[in-house]
Image (cartoon, rainbow, N blue to C red; front, side, top):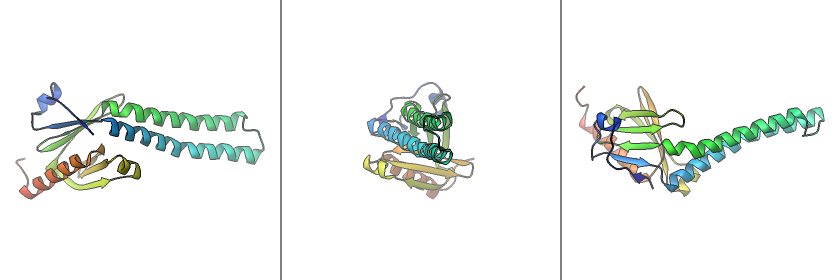
Length: 178
């Protein structure tokens, strides 16, 4: 469940945020998904390093403790650890704000990035749900526009429906003032 945010201040107030904005930050289910996602990605990338190290051992008939296969395996472990660290650190600076005419996604680990996408600019909506997300009752929403797109990770299904409905309403009402 996303934790509902309170009234926004600072840069958000300058953008025109008000009480009609819903601010979502990761709750326990979303954090769990980010952690599992980082672990799965890390394991996925660790396997090729392990295979190369084992091929080196069998091809050159050296022990696994030799510097080259051990170094390759250590590099794979480093990639695994970095992916798990990503899964732990990324949700700390992740938020989704659902407004009446646009969505804002704030994300980053070292540098925080804010992405705004107006509902009338959305050309396509993709809903993705992996087996892990299904078990946690979460979906991923991808909003595509001519200028790119934005990926909304680990959303509650009700929030994804709200965004999709607002996009449909905006598209049915026609273009707004430019």
